[in-house]
Length: 69
Image (tube, rainbow, N blue to C red; front, side, top):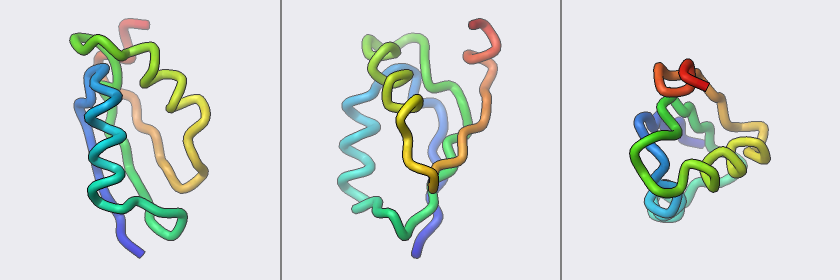
């Protein structure tokens, strides 16, 4: 079991998903997403859809870019 922390995804959903594949993120791991999921990148909508359906072993924290919504 590992714990990962990722922040500042900024709408780069494909890169984020590739990162999860690279670290072989699984149900036994924990993931802390430390905000700034949207803005700048072209896939903010896709990122928000993933966040809506994220697994229970993912902790979501709000960043300053989410404050703008």
